[in-house]
Length: 110
Image (cartoon, rainbow, N blue to C red; front, side, top):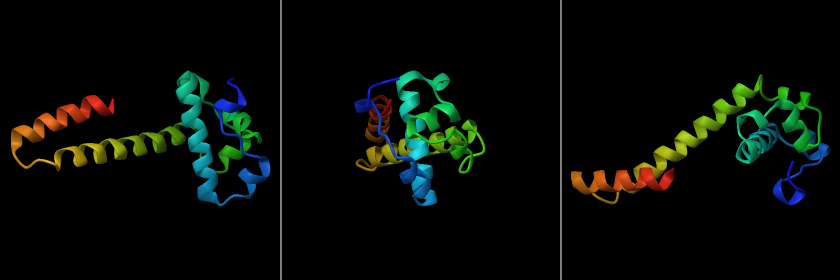
């Protein structure tokens, strides 16, 4: 586990008292931080609860499983990926320069 500087900590009152969408966002953000620090094996409902300083069961109020959280994360990443490419190729109308921009965007995004 990293230091408190490495993670954003929310009080139980903040998590439980926040709007549903805000709490979902905190759970997703925490899962992304855990994944970035240690990979998929580090992400569990228990770890999310520990990071947010709440019961592991709290996450189940918003997501059925860890898989559902990752489905949401994947969806967001792919949306960002698509938006990044669209922005890159819109700068050019000719096919070859668009292809070149697309290739560069692919490398830069990764």
